[in-house]
Image (cartoon, rainbow, N blue to C red; front, side):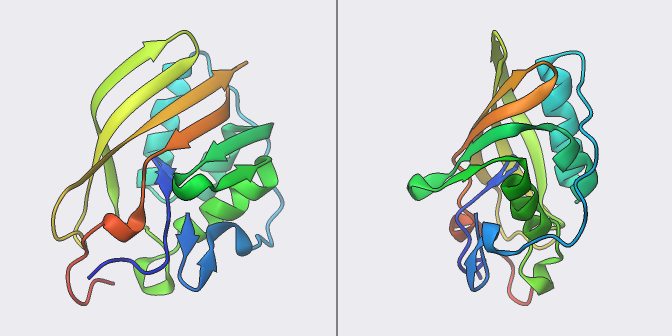
Amino acid sequence: MRLSNFAICSFAAGFLLAAGGAFGQAKTATKLPPQKPLATAKAVVDEHLDALNHCDWKRLVQQYSDDAEFMLPAGQIVKGRSEVANLFASFVKPISQGGLCGLKFTPEHTFIVDGTVNVQWVVTGDAVAEPYRGADAYETKNGLMTGQVSTFDANQVKMKKGAK
């Protein structure tokens, strides 16, 4: 079984179309948490991946600058911290509710060029029938995520039948 109507995550997730429409269509009712700049580009990405793997919306949103841009497959672009927050609000939902909580993104190869952290990753999890691989590039500035380019396409993730 494949997740229906998704077009990203990043590594994060990253990253996205949710069941019935674009990820960004789900609006958050929660106020954005304060930003939490980190000391290095790698620290930002490590925090991102850990927050993603723990379905922690607050920690995910704390990492993004106000003018962040998230580029997804098929030419979709999510602009601004509020829209990124909306994207992750859908992602952190359980699979039974159209989200991707429970997927685990594990880096397989990482290389850093200036403030850009490039990560090749594999997605696994109890609901995943077979590993799914992709890559993200994370651009950071002043300890925050300012840009992300993701190859994640949830339609390509093969899920176990009856996955919840």
